[in-house]
Every structure is written in structure tokens, then in C-alpha cells.
Length: 103
Image (cartoon, rainbow, N blue to C red; front, side, top):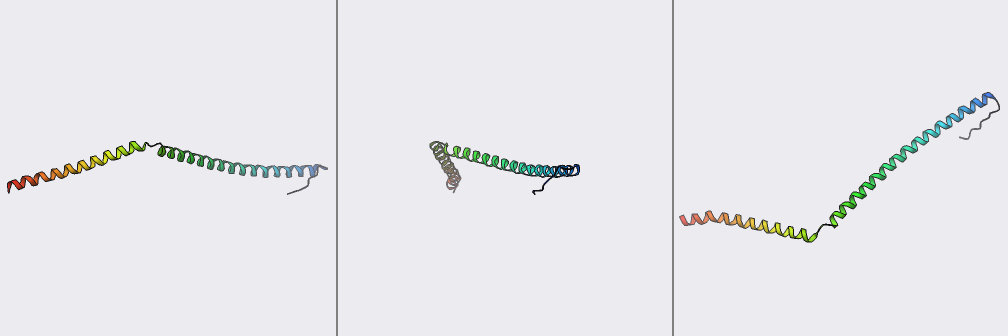
């Protein structure tokens, strides 16, 4: 604010102490505000770093997947599904064959 202070008399010295006390309170409030902003920024940075680390781990997991092994597993499961379907079809034909013999 640019207030001038004087120490020439006891009253002006007391007044100067009041002005200095007010300035110190203002500085303390501003430091507290800046500290709060700094804490928020640090939390935001930590959150971003954790997110980046998680993304990197997920990417690594995807890239490290053994594609040949996964393809073998896929083909195996496809064959099992087709074999199961064929067995069900055969099972459904048996009762019909028995009925044809009886007729």
C-alpha cells in the first residue's frame, strides 16, 4: 500500500508497529493462500503421474501379450465349441433314428 511510517515520537512508533503488524498479517494470509494452491498443484501432479504410470503399465501388458499363444488358445476354443456343437447334433439324431426303426 506504500504507507510511510515514522519513529520520531512514541505515538508514531506505536502507530508504525500497528502498520507493520497489519503488513505481517497480510503477508501471512497470502503465504497461506499460496501454500494451499501449491498443495493442490502437487496433488494434481501426483494424480497425473499415477495415471501416466497406470497407462504405461496397461500398454506394457498389451504389448507383452504373446500373440502366438493367444492365437493357439483361440483356435483350441473354437475347435472345442465346434466339437460340442457336432456332438449335440449327433445326440439329437439318435432318438430320431430309434423312432424311424419303430415305425
